[in-house]
Image 1 (tube, rainbow, N blue to C red):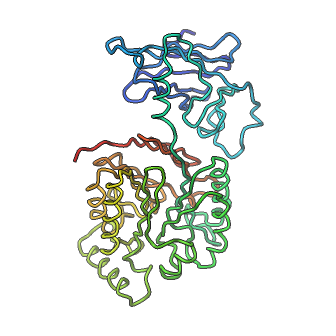
Image 2 (image 1 turned 45 degrees about the vertical axis):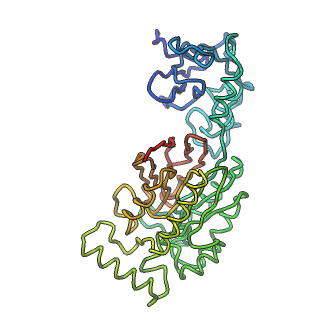
Image 3 (image 1 turned 30 degrees about the horizontal axis):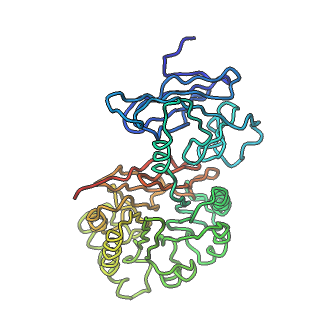
Length: 424
């Protein structure tokens, strides 16, 4: 059969696709089962891949990157790339916890291309040789620096454990095993820290004792966000149980600031009965119901004025220090949804007033959601781990100078979140 010029058939029957499009240019793999996966990213320039071909023995993939003759200079030269790996690995040796896409998973160290293992780094291409004599070393070193992983972290949403029978799609008793699986993956990936964005339990205080041992298997530092199901006792007690520094707090890593907010601060369930915040929560809910807001739900909450002032101060400080920011909450704020925090608009306005905020991450809506870059900010709702009896949902996030890459496990989708450069 004849194939177009940008399609190459591997010796094992898979297909290599040379991408020619806008933005980043990838080599894509297509398995015999019709599944597409990312194979290699062009980090040299914005030109297309072309002319992929395997060596006669099938052990080396040669592929060209086009140059740009309209822009003289070493960085715009065409080049030929050779990609090879450690040899063949039998399918039985694949990690059992990885999803099967004709390979053991996109985060795996070895990428299996129809049985041929190509050694890749976290930047997707490691064993890479430049065959074109005209290629200088300086552009390669610069490109590798730009695409170097700064750090990575694990993220889990809504484990929501309870020793309870299933309710609808929620299978509570399966969560400890799912969380232990996530912990094992985070340890294998050697993440720098891990975050669970709330609802680690469903309803009973004793559930903390039964689910936290699975979470504590994560060897890296662990950070917790408060969720609406985490309050069989008031906020102060939950903060102590989860060993949190405060109900809202922040921490920094390699030029990035992570801000943990508490969207349960004003609510009908997180504060002692009769307290000022408890009464404020009851009044706020009545006003929202009167206004007909779709998020006027008793299982939502909001951020207090005191916390909003603190958030503004941390954002100002991060901007002064030139840090990029990721905000972590339990409830979504964008797009409009029945699960949103009560004062979602006020939170959005505060975040979008700062050019250095890259993303807002949350759980609460178990189906997941995504609002692609609104005014420079990505709003991502991660899927609930508690959903379904036999599929998991968690992620490893890799942080680069110019983007965040979400590497999914189970039901959670992969995403690439570019860092926007706003001039407000």
